[in-house]
Length: 512
Image (cartoon, one colour):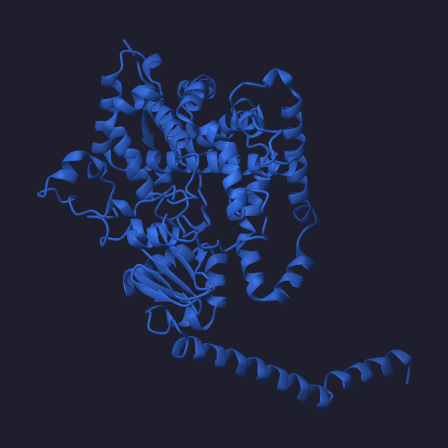
């Protein structure tokens, strides 16, 4: 017998060894027993057992991760709320809500803050994940950049980028080509916020492509479901690391290096000092004991880029789609914009707010019908005793959230919730008991959140949205292309919406 033949027989014997087979069988049996025991405990003996919810999801968490991988998790959670009501148990240690009271109990003032459920490793250097002390420091440093005066001072800078957007769209209209409004909104808001955060735009509108730094951020966001699954099943962390492409493993460091580089350039560019942007605000008290470190400057500037651009572009995409799907609303808002101004130059922050109530209602309805973050931002109940959330007593260390799209799209909170009705946000609907929208639970709409950790850039975002939408409605007649029918309804989501192109035809308006 040759050595290779002997080796083959030896390995075959090893593989089918009765002892090994027994060990494998016992291990598999123990795993199944452990899984079933956990499932039975979760369904019948958990402190949350009386809260209704999908039993298979509760018993086998892998089903939730599979739904998230496929982009269908939020769709399924919406369906669960339709089936089980305003309070739904999603896991052995997690409960989802769709009420305004839950918003205040989870995120509001007047009680101890509930800690966040972290998607990635904890990073106290940036405002979204920081502890309470550092969070207060960051808000203090950033607040001057979001004051009423600062927003007025930033308006000319914003106008430069919006002017360029209109110019580019006029070129598209003249060529009779179709326009992907998702792309155009993204290019504009990233350029605008890049200028405010780092002192330089990303040249998206000029080059007509997404900057590599932005593309990397979206790539890292898409890794979120994998990271969350790996935390539930630690073995997956090792397996994931083995198969992760090298360039993807390096993308986060590349991201950080680019951020450090542009922050360094902004700090040392004396010509940009005093321009009133985000970096000016963060550097204003650089000699104080609470001054931000370089690492904190980089981390928070990066967060502001994403929070101040992607969400605004998403809302503009959504409200554009729903206006095009609702011809009466589109006609009314277009007539309002064009009748309230004698010239395009009159459209500014102040007048876009005071003269365009219906357009503002369209934006609010857009935030409801297409929230930029469709999921829930989870918190954990405090570890030292039970918590009361929306009248429900929960044990310590329970994950809780208001699931935004589930809360905004249910008829329990809004009349005819699946349709687009800007009228629900106007005074007559709020004041007239005969209005079908009178009993709408408007306080459940909190796309910028509430409490001490609400979005610091809310007013900036509204100013961006008002100016951009008003300028587009002033300049163009818009039609939805056939290939974008059902654009919003068929979308998947993984923390953020996975937006396909929103193809539209633009026709430049002839102004007399």
